[in-house]
Image (cartoon, rainbow, N blue to C red; front, side, top):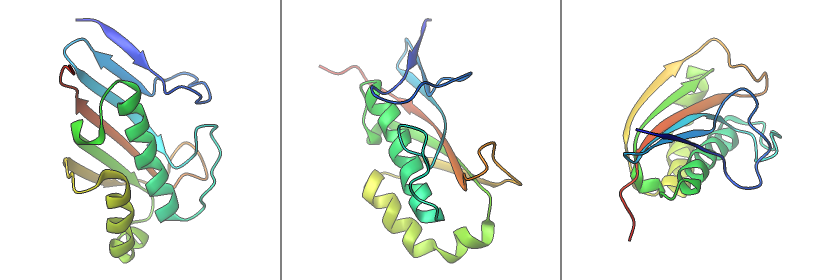
Length: 134
């Protein structure tokens, strides 16, 4: 099996990590994506804004590998504030559907003490299975 690094066009360089690693069998591992934009700027300061941006980043990596959101098989969410997440369920659902539609892969959520980037409130990693496209 071979590996190919996936990096969406126009994104700032990934330093010391890969945004995605595509295995020759079509499995795509998407590294943890946080709520910053393609130039590593936090436009949104709120949880929902960062959550939506992190999801958009995950999908951008999948699309850069030739896939689509519906190819995502699993996600792991790392959140810093459990209470804020629970209090925002309606908004979470709305933001999720704006990016992912009604595709609901297997998901896990972990509450963590902190993330590497101080402004980050959420990090999402994913695995996608990209079928051969005609």
